[in-house]
Length: 405
Image (tube, rainbow, N blue to C red):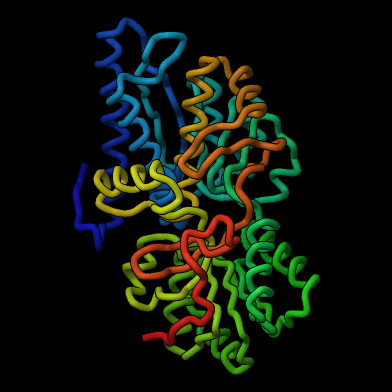
């Protein structure tokens, strides 16, 4: 595996390194299998290593797949009906293209007949893959699908680990109300993720007296938000809410600093929970809030996972979807160890039981994670702490964001 400094990993090196590790994992289990008389468990997936989805996928998902397979194989493999079998990961680059993603999963589940699959990255890709996985009868535990529409499709083989837009936006609005916010301005990505979260946010705000002074959508790949942010600064809202992808989260934060937009509450996501955000914004992360659901203080297991991830990749997992990705792998492993590789039995077991994860106990109601409420996190020092709701908080909310430096 290519190594790099913890502070500035090279994206190209990281993606090449990840691909090389997948290749190594694909070979090593076959060698292991010769010693124990049984073949490897073949687990397939397509995920973005290139293109606009790669920034999220290569933080929140694929590193977790690699670390998990390595840890399981180091312990002798997956325990199936009394025998341990090594994992063989079969991973492909979907190039951030829905069509490529669908075609690859179709091959993995169809002609390749892999034993299990792991999910792609993002709401759009999961929206495309979930019906396919359902048709082929493969359980799909998705840690980066944020879509109520997908939940409402009631696909028996699909399980969503993330808290959905209504829960996440509901928690944010509850927090704003509890802290006396009178006005907000909103910018949002014009795609499935942005539109669903925006709709959920609007719905939650309508039940309050908070005034929305601006609502602006923007397209994928936006390069300049400064004119919109200048307009918002003139309106002087108590809170700014950006429903953004990682590159736009950084763009909005940088340009808010440039134009002097510094409300009491500055919320942007997805991307706020990434180490990359801290690397780029440095001291200016202090007080910024966004989508997050865990920290190293959440549980001893969460701290152990965090440390193992940093040791292997020289970079931190993000404090939101990475934890859900790891929890999904834990659930899959526990289910396999209980019922084996019969996918229908796996689906039934996952649907009907609670599982122990680094985020706490998780059970599903239909396709939805019924155990974890909507949450808000905030950068405080070196960690992205859970600050809302209070019963899940790992730190107290700082109610007045410091000025940009």
